[in-house]
Amino acid sequence: MLDINFPKFEKKDFQDLTLNLVEPINKINLRGKNRDFFAKAGKILSIMLPIDPNTSATIKNISAVWLSPDEWMVYGKDIDKNISLSLDNEISKLNLGSVTDVSDQWILINMKGKNVFDVLSKGSPFNFNKFKSTKNIVVQTLLNHVDVILHQNDLNNVNLFVRKSFSEHLWLWINDSSSFL
Amino acid sequence: MFIITCPFCGERDQSEFAAGGEAHIVRPKQPTELSDDEWADFLFMRKNIKGVQFERWNHAHGCRKWFNVIRDTSNDKIHAVYKMGEKPPIK
Image (cartoon, rainbow over all chains, first blue to last red):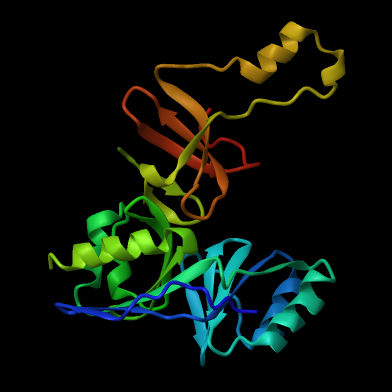
């Protein structure tokens, strides 16, 4: 299920900022609209998919992140083969929605510390003023012209998702920007 | 640079969006019955108004949804944003 060839980024500490690669970790993209889709996904994952824009829901080690009105990304250490197979069999094969394993397409980098938003603000057009004081908030935006998904599950603790092919470039950029804090 | 309020995600910078051209162009019901000129007119000819224009935009680096915007092209002032399929709030 998981590709072992993910980038090897070593943990880095800067002034009030720690960067850490959180891989391997399972990520599943879910798309659907109807009531049966929500019911099945909720039952299998034991989590209600958030319907409010830019929000997320986390239970134990599984997080469901809102991406658009009919699209979510579910990730976490507790997502195993059984959950993935159940989603496939009970949603995808019954045409209730689509289930795509995106574990190898997105790289998860955790950014923790008081200076997280100082670094993000250097390369993003997004206004982080409200974002930084809200828990369980999500935003899809650009960082140094690269598409990213930012999920703040705790204050000053951001999970950054970036496409694998852009991850090394963005990692180097974040490191470089962080060194000027 | 200007701010666009995505009807799904909220206020975002223009750099997250892609412009999709003029809105509310209706596809002919029977394209085979059109002359070449009429078909080319539907496919290619677009207004390029200096002033208030109805446009389609896509939140390409966000939710990836399409929506409509009423924008003044002379000063980038946005008069209204509404979802696909909805009627324009301003005529």
